[in-house]
Length: 66
Image 1 (tube, one colour):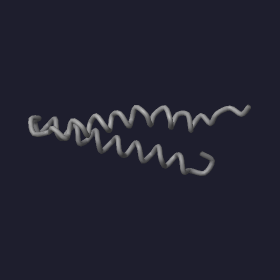
Image 2: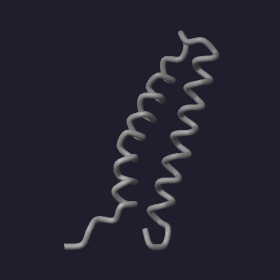
Image 3: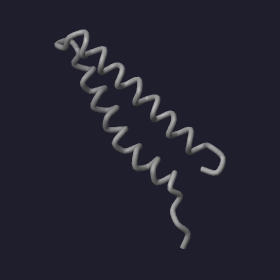
């Protein structure tokens, strides 16, 4: 039996916690009326970077040989 692709495993192992980080951040941003501008900005930065990481992971999935 062939060994699983280590890149595919890594992509899967990173995608699940990344989805949780993104979801929790977005839930926190829904109730942003009571948070300071600094906290709100920090959460938006986390959200932006999580979306970027998700795009990178999806890009490795479509790369030749992936």
